[in-house]
Image 1 (tube, rainbow, N blue to C red):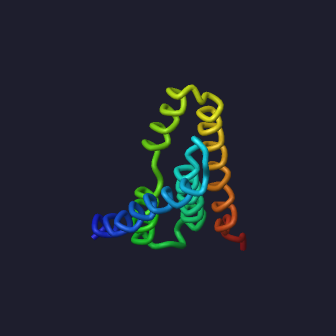
Image 2: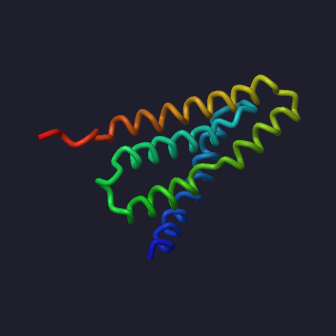
Image 3: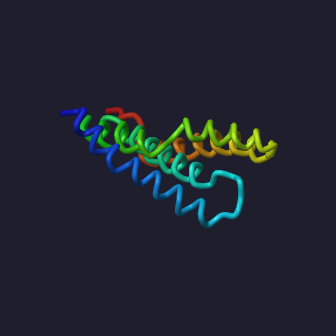
Length: 125
């Protein structure tokens, strides 16, 4: 059953990644991979929220949304490939910006969502 939930989440996440990437990138006349950055930040935000909610969510939600949807929505391989392509094109500033911004903003998005959804430790009696 868990594998089916992961599959279903991925079946939504993968096409959404493609469509979002194309839509965002078409609006920017730049070598910088804005579409990939967008989907990776969105996935970091969602996964951070799920992690913050923790045990308040059933495992089925984590499999469907966390592993399936976020796993297919986000893309480390495309991030790596696009960074390499920027360096090959001698767009070194864009390559460096892609690495720094993607990592820093991804961590910030995950932390923010985690902090918002984390109820903290249970109250003491």
